Amino acid sequence: MTASDTHRTIDAVWRIESPRLIAGLARVVRDVGLAEDLAHDALVAALEQWPEAGVPDNPGAWLMATAKHRAIDLVRRTKLIERKHEEIGRGLKAGQGGTAPDLDAALDDDIGDDLLRLVFTACHPVLSTESRVALTLRLLGGLTTEEIARAFLVPEPTVAQRIVRAKRTLTEKKVPFEVPRGAELAARLSSVLEVIYLVFNEGYTATAGDDWMRPALCEDALRLGRILAGLAPREPEVHGLVALMEIQASRARARVGPAGEPIRLFDQNRALWDQLLIRRGLAALERAEKLGGTLGSYSLQAAIAACHARARAPAETDWARIAALYESLAQLAPSPVVELNRAVAVAMAFGPQAGLDLVDALTAEPSLKGYHLLPSVRGDFLARLGRPAEARAEFERAAALTRNARERELLLGRAAACADGSMPPGPR
Image (cartoon, rainbow, N blue to C red; front, side, top):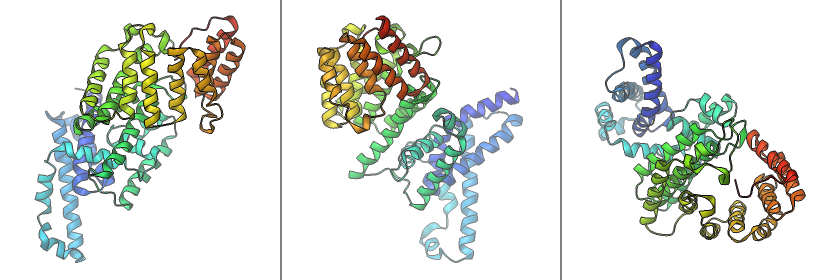
């Protein structure tokens, strides 16, 4: 194996093993930043030794053993300093004198609980949304700062600062490395799911830049969601989110044309939809439903996506059910964006005028003032009602609002199609 082959292997191993490595260390040292530093020490050791000695038969165990020894050395040094300053005498008498052996055993405990603790720590509400996303991708996704910056089209120093600040905040706020219990669990779980879905959505429909999709982010989010579902199998909304992402990801190949151009839902070749992902998504939705209780927002959105997945052709879509599901979603989590999506379903089920009436009621909503999909949806309804001049103006306004180059091209194309009467019906 050449040196370059070894480095590629190390990179692949790190992506897979680093979350477990950091999680196991963080439980013991109680500091996410320190745990990451120790894990990186093990990575540096691998980069130094594996090209000459060869890749171990169990590279993950090798990394853990190396990081474990670094952690034990660190604890021993810390204890020595503490003894010299006589600051922890009572703690040592209480049974902390055997820290190194205890640490050795602790790092071999069930890693699943550690990963769950790491998920909740990285997504703690004390951090900003941007920091939660960056830290989660760094610690659980195994992405480098450069990769995160490239994925979100922000400068690398900005991402680096977010990660540093996030780790510092967790330390300063003394955020415990634990899975929340009781009433706190629901709110904290909501934060975790929000972060994962934000990552997925940025990959599924990029908010800015030249690409319509960034598949790598979708894959990272799906992997995190699947891990979380394995760690928290009794939480229905976790399965609901996984179902939603699996089904949406199934359309990835059909959503982009040969030149990278967006292809709307109605125009997609459904033979390209990934049936394995659809089956996985429907199974996850079934798990969420079997756990009982009222469906949460992610499960409701997954049920909507399932309606599309089950339709072999656009005409077979159960738009009345989709409209009813959006009605339920609006009652559970009311928002102007949900109402806009409900308007699309209503228009498809009951005609464009019914949808336009709902959209017109949203035009004064301040939060949608710069939202490009509002004029886009309104333009679609107007075109279907035989009002092409008004529709064209709406599509042009939508094109001016979007920050994604591919979507801008699509909207301008729809505006031009209004002029020659060639615009096809249906939502994107």
